[in-house]
Length: 66
Image (cartoon, rainbow, N blue to C red; front, side, top):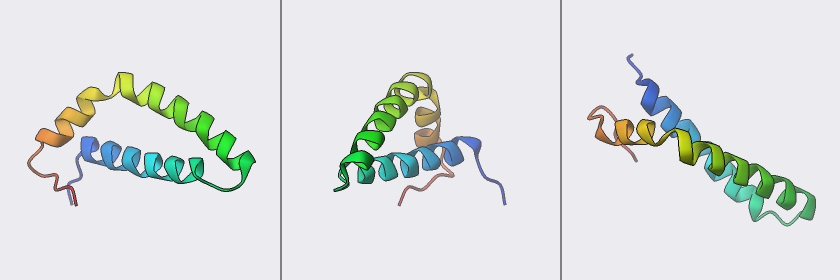
């Protein structure tokens, strides 16, 4: 089975982003603060350096987003 590196990274990033978003809306104040900081760092890093991976994933005909 051939798996595109772009697809793997893109889908993993979506999963991490979803988990961080769930943590931000957590009832526990400690978890909320911690995940908020993690989410800020995640967005800062991935928004600047991986726009090409996102574009390549969107244009790759083998990827079907569900």
